Image (cartoon, rainbow, N blue to C red):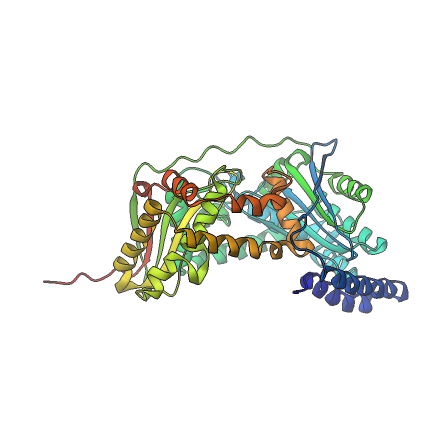
Length: 471
């Protein structure tokens, strides 16, 4: 049987070296004990049943209005903590790039510490910290051992970062210039240009339309005070969830959540994002670029996290273009005709409908043919649906590897954060395989016919235009 938790073991072993450099005998004993417990848990896990309950998620709300999601795991003396805010790029307003810069500067200075101080504090206890943002969320994450001296120092550092960010002017200018350099570099990337144009044509004036990192014009005009105002508005308890997965008791988890939130700015959860409007008609846009390959993106707004059609769309897309080398798109575009190195499709569910996206890269002189095959394959799938054999194979593939998606604390914490932020059922992981098995050929066909309107598809191509033959 395959043994899991290897990522966690690697993490512990990596940090053993750090402890030997920074700590004395008492901490070395803690590491020895951690390695022994890690080994013991691996032995026990090798005999466990992967079909058992995925995770028991405890849930409560703090007096400040923050939802907390907690999973107790044993065997490894470590914990993964995430604080997730509704503070992604969808909250930028017209200051595109503001959310990403705010999250990016959190650990460059906080309280009395600069970036080097913060890094040294985490390194001295073998902890890993990160802050990131996406379209929907901003996330602050910590991974640390649970031995009390190590845990307390890591948690204190995270709490100060969360509650006392400095947004120093020098740090702001450096990160802003780095962002601008990245945006300038994107102008030389046909893939980046295609993605930017695709989101823009799908979402128009909706907050999902602009790039997460912003655009040169808006980022240039940002000031450090803008980041401070964004932080004060969105990094508030009512706008956060806390996820704790690891070897802490429930009482310890409750105390951890309370400590992390103490000192956050007072405020309220922002208004809900506006609904996504579907395109009124199909469009095709070409962006000229001096490349040998053309990037092709086709799609429209698709599904959201709590969509009743989600499992039908998810399983159906696995057959259409989400399963790699055995998908219909790959077979038609690559295997039969050699028109692209790969072709794929995906639904990207978010708080509001994220994109349904079909993509490929092809030689410039094959763009028209490749696009025709792509559209025909999609049309055939929507009209006829998959075969029963394709559905059976897809279900086996999805359910067979499902348990491996959250076989480390870190991965499990990511799933719990998704469940918590999008307020999905707490038994989502336990019922995932059952809901997958309930999908039928008829339910997939019905869902795709209702949700993927061929008359509304948006097409973006970026590359060197095909030369027209002269008769």
